[in-house]
Length: 272
Image (cartoon, rainbow, N blue to C red; front, side):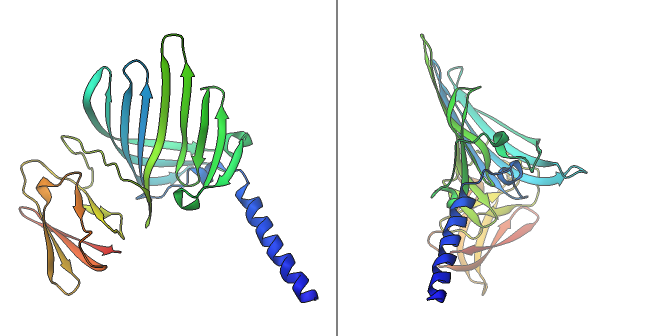
């Protein structure tokens, strides 16, 4: 009987701890916990007279802390495109930036969070919801390990209606991926690293190639099985969104060899 009571008590404490933990407000350090190689795709849209849309691809390429470990710095590669009432066609830009976050052990938004929950989205990563009176925004939320705030804003004026959304549509953290990729590719691609890379890895349907692809140069990609058999050939020069369809490959380990004019690069990936 005592053994049964202890078992029930253990289960109760486990459930209680899970619920309590899920309801605790995240710290700034937990929200902005990025690693080198993390990728985030965001979209920002607004409807004000003609409206606008901005899409961004952000990749973390370096990370370091202040001497007191109270501030973290991230160096990012950012590619973006923009269109709006004053710019009906896509305008492209690509650059590097350094972003920082301080007071890493402090509670997010000074602890003034309306709701904390574990969502079925984002692989169960914890969400922190709050109302931002300064911007009159509803449904601000930050995701542990994925940043924010992401928000939806409705403001009504006598002569116009502004509807503003800023959303995370895709992320890749290590082997964990969520959402639908929305790569920003500019007319003159800027990628600071000469060596190419692929992700997500492992992948299931699409394998995205990141690297310096110059116009006018012919690139071929050959995919080989681990036993050396050629299973797929790809014209890298004419790829759309630098995406290689690998949905027809059987699960297993493969080598992607990129052939340029005077050199080759080999990348290994796992097809799920």
